[in-house]
Amino acid sequence: MAGVDLRRVAFRQLHDHSMIKSPLLIILAALSLPACQNTLDQQVIDAQDKQVANLTADRSRNQAQLDRIKAENRTLAEQIAFEQSRNTELQQRVSAAEASLEAKDAETDQLNTSFQGLNVDVGRRGGYIVLGMSSELTFSSGKAELSKQGRETLSKVGDVLKTDYAGRTLWVEGHTDNEQPKKSGWKNNLALSANRAMSVADFLIADLGLDPNFVRVAGYGEYAPKEGNDTPEGRAKNRRVEILILE
Image (spheres, helix red, strand yellow):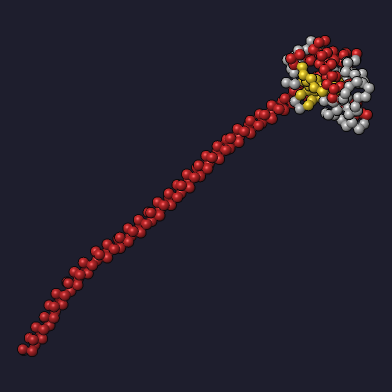
C-alpha cells in the first residue's frame, strides 16, 4: 500500500506540474502574437505608402507632360492662326495684283483702240503703260525737231493723255540705236536721245497744255535697246521715243 501511494503521489505531482506549465506556454504564445501582427501591419502600411508615393510621382510626371503638351498645342494653334492670317493676306494681295493686271490689260486694249492707225505701240513695263513711237515717224534722221507727222501723232496722243490721264506722271524717254551720229552735229547718241525726248515734252506742255509738273524727261541713247542692233530691223525698233504713264 505504501508503494502504491507513493506512485500516486508522484504521478499527481507530475500532473500538477504539467498543468502549471501549459497555461504559461499559452500565455507566452498569446503575448507574442500582437508583436508579429504589428510587424506585418507595418510592412503592409509601408508597402501601401510606397505605392501611394509611386502613384503620386507618376501623377506628377503625367501632369507635367500634359501641361507641356497643352503648351505645345497652344503654340501650334497660335502658329496656325498666324499662318492662316498671312495666307489670307497673301491671297488678298495676289487677288489685288491680278485685278490690277486685268485692269491694266483692259486699259492697254482701250488705248490700242484709241490709237489705231497712228503707229503707236501700246504695251506695259511692269505696272506702267508704255506708248512707243518710232523715231522715223516723229523725227527726221539725226534731227531733234518734231516732223509734221510726229506733231500730228502726238496731238492725238496728247488729247487722250490730257483727258484720261490728268494728274498722272508722264515719263518721256528718248532712245537710239548704236550707230554714232556723224554729220548731224550731235556729240553722241545720248545727247540726241535726250533732246528728242525734250522736244516731245515741250510739245505736250506748250502746244497741248499738259501740266509741266507731271512731265519728266530722260535720254538713254543706245543703252536701253529694245531689240538687237545687229540687224537693220532691230536698229529701227531701237530708234524710238516712249511715254510711260506712271501712277
